[in-house]
Image (cartoon, rainbow, N blue to C red; front, side, top):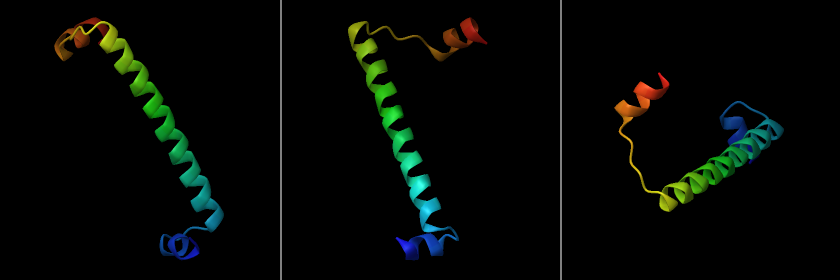
Length: 57
């Protein structure tokens, strides 16, 4: 790990902090995807991007 951190010009503690934050972000993304997938599976309605843009942009 120290060699990896040095190769990217960072400290071991910064490397570990960034790694932990990336892992947390990945877990949150996976949770959001799972919830969206379950919602879609319960009511599989497909809305075109153009319709979404009309509604929200």
